[in-house]
Image (cartoon, rainbow, N blue to C red):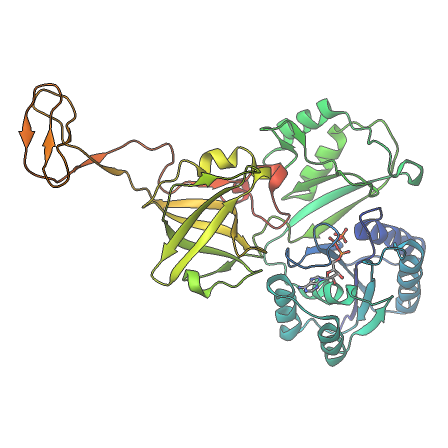
Length: 418
Ligand code: ATP
């Protein structure tokens, strides 16, 4: 039987530089020099979006190779590259590497989902890793082992690919030289096979990172072929030192758990849940928009934050009585941060004063005294308002999502849903 060696790497970068995927691509190159081939694409696995110590998107890397005579050389390469390239000066950078030479078991798969849904401590990860036979390497506090074990273990029942192009080290930290026109052309020619290239609502080039990391650009796609076509279209004014395609759980909604009722949801979890809009969404200082949804079990405040820009306009079209399904996560202030929502049933009925025989809408004649017509003086005794169908901008059954610039790595865009 063929045996494999799985390699997990995480927590090597800092806000000032480096990227675990870059480190992985350097390792893969060294593997190549030593005749070691990867089995399948390297994996870029996004974990709990609420993990406290994340640098950016809480991503770990998993590699798989044959467990043959070269396995020891592979281990040496991995450990020496992690030693060489990790941002050890940053307090928050605590690399962790694991090697595992067995089959991925169901308990490892469960662990990986826990790393997406919950918080795991370093001790817990270490104990778990040892219990399944992982070889564990901790650098400084070694927090990275939490994500490393998950990165090799997560079943990719749904996945996408990301092509990452890397800069020459001399250019790290300088302004990226990307020809934006060519990015528009690339999007035009390859969307929806590639996606999240551009946020058209803000003319924002989403393939370009905004941090000083080694990545020149990252293109996301459902297929490797379209990534290669896209790369051929994007023009840059600086050398591409290296590039690498990762298989990833980005854009799969793997972080979203189905909650059958509002009270089942916990803080720092990501869910989709149905509820009835309780009040008209309102904007507060800072530009954040909030409203409540409720069901028989309770209610929760939902937020569309300022960075979601025009999405707030869509949210503002909701009205009390609308039934919606929201997708997102419960953050620090116990507010449900909406990533997208589906309209289940619009409340398209408004109760209005009756219309007089003369055609004019009547006004109240006083509390409990019915209605009167200001124009012709007509009066009616009934206090009952009349149900009137109103037109709505939102549509039943439709989904509405945050713009590309404000979207989580794990969020499934609508272009992947239908
Ligand atoms: P990059 O994507 O560039 O690697 P990052 O945003 O992923 O940066 P990391 O440097 O990987 O940030 O740091 C995230 C840390 O959180 C890692 O140490 C990882 O092991 C840990 N971690 C991941 N998932 C969990 C979890 N569910 N509970 C607790 N810690 C976690």
